[in-house]
Length: 355
Image: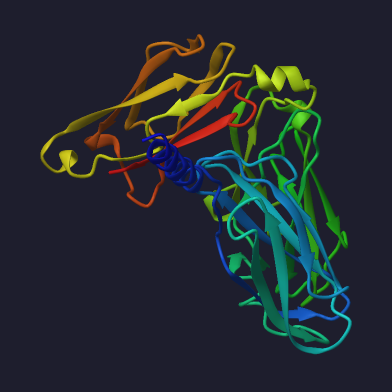
């Protein structure tokens, strides 16, 4: 009998270990640069998501040649959280290329490969593929700036490429820059048919509150240009609490959020009803109080009601989510709720809503 119980216990242990683990996924397996210019380094950014239920740690990232340099998120990625892997490529020869990026982690399998491909040319003539977004006679390679999650004091940068298809020299200027953003153009003046880069630096120490900060900047199309929807570029960043000074003892006694679900579907009840609601349970499985310091919604159709914002160890509360059908608007817009907590392994929780 003892052996049978021991055997069953061993099976349960193995089964639970198989269920409780991090899982790694990427927003893309292959990135196609198209044509790139010789001796002009380019960077690919992969968004890594932890689809498991334990923290994901990216232990190392390698590239298939010395012409590539990798960078990646070093902090543990909480369940449902996102990190980034970047690979910079400085081509040494003309022609087609195919390179791999190896990502080592504590997930199973512990190594996955992503690719980037393209063609190195002496000079790019057609900018429509490499710079798909047109603002007047200026073309750019991205239409928004979504900075990765940041902490106070950090100064992350994002760069976009810009091409001048007008018939005169052009000076790139981003209008309505808030205090926490600075831009730098290289070169400062683009001649006709030439391209350059604009680097945007975010000073996280200037952000006033945790959670999502959104704004818009406006790319001038010519000297004396004015702001409008036609030259608008959205910018966003999420400021998270900084736990870098936590001691080992603090980590052992930290709060730990548990949430019943992070994806809810209200599409069926909204077919017949003008309003639909759904309850989500939130618990603290840690040893110190869990504080929900921020709860943000980004659409007037979404309403939230949270009974408690501070949960003691083993405490539980209910988050009620309500959707009003008449205010939902464009279905292309992603409905979500952002929650900021003092759980060092899961400071950001996103709840996605299907309607």
